Amino acid sequence: MKKIWEKDKINTSLSIVDDYCFEEGIDDDNKLVEYDVYGSIAHAYMLYKIGILSYDEFEKLKKHLIEIINLYRKGLFSIKPADEDVHTKVEAFLIKNLGEVGEKIHTGRSRNDQVLVDLRLFAKDKLLLIFEEAYQVVNTFLLAAKKYEYIPMPGYTHMQQAMPSSVGLWMASFAESLVDDLELLKTSYKLNDQSPLGSGAAYGVSLPIDRKLTANQLGFSKVQNNSLYCQASRPKIQLAVIQALVQMMMTLSKFAQDLLMFTTTEFNFFNVNPKFCTGSSIMPQKKNLDIMEYLRAKTHKIIGYQQISASIAAGLPSGYNADFGETKKPFVEAFEVTIKTLQLIKIVVPSLTPNIKNLKKACKKELLATHSAYELVKKGLSFRKAYKKIGANLKSIAEIDLVEILKQTNHLGGPGNLGISKAFTRLKNEKLWRKKQQVEFKAVINKLLK
Figure 1 (cartoon, one colour):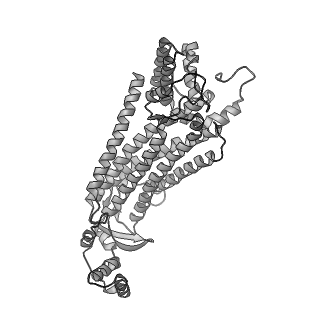
Figure 2 (cartoon, rainbow, N blue to C red; figure 1 turned 45 degrees about the vertical axis):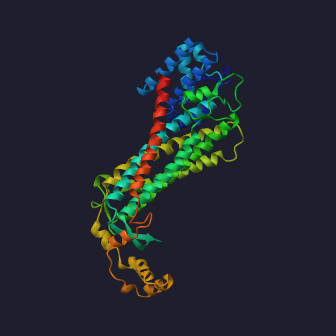
Figure 3 (cartoon, rainbow, N blue to C red; figure 1 turned 135 degrees about the vertical axis):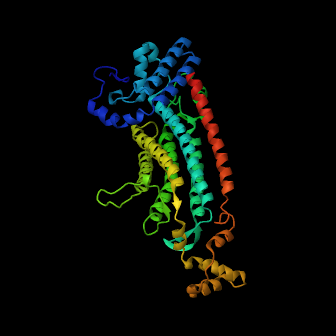
């Protein structure tokens, strides 16, 4: 296929050039088709409003752009290496079907701001999906924490038994961590929610384009102002999003590591549904919780994507650089891995059942040392003297009901006061924020395609 930038037979590219530059990113471009169409419809409408297109031309372009979405959803529109990218494929389709009218669609924009718009809309859509999946995961952790609030388990520091803990405290810790991760994600969502359309190749265009109009048409909260910075912000904002995803994956990776340890034969604190396990090709007895090992590995994969994006962006000169293209794959895949991980954890957590007998048995008497010291403090002894007295006579520590100790530790955030009801309320408020964003985004897209 003749490329849109070819001026003559001499000004073309070798197949090895096309393969090297474009082939690897084709899968990712095929995931951006609908977002590219959304941007093109908004841009075409703006061109009509400023007099570049007639209303009839706009209607024809919109009709055929919507046809692309229909074909794409049926598997009949896909990008091949020879197409270079999604933007070229879409424009070529319009030119083939509309001739000169199709040739007008690119007026006042560059593939540079097109890909930015596509990725911003893609990220917005996927972030909202991640918010929804994460809320459900937080909910499952909180429900488990409530259900097993006072089931004792050893608390560890330095990989050694330390103080009495509970299954509730353990479960609720991941819920709170994920809610903080969502705050980071909301910040990246806000950064991403800016329209770069109209910045062109980084230096604007000498036409009376209306950037506010296209931003509103696409549901962005604001126009990203400086046209040169729009291009520089591509890896910057993508990196902010990936960093937030890294935090979320790290929370889930910690849970995976704990679960792998606590389900070993030596610990046997929890039962896992066998359907989540795999087997060995040589050892008939094995039940391997591979999914949690893969989760750990995939977390490092996302950290690697973060490093790739930062390394590519570091030290680049101002303006658009083709290096940016290499940040697309890590950006897209970071979303896919995180979404699948959340969907997995969402069904794993409710399937866990604590082995109460083993958990209580694992709580050695030494776990009560600090509590015993505090009992002496209540009688007037200084903490340091109490500390030394108990430390010198660990064998004399009295047996105390672990559940009672958990309930006595009732300061804010302690095992006896997890604040689960407040956590559910906070989660509900967060869900209302996400719902508002989702409804607004869907309404914008529906209006665009109406």
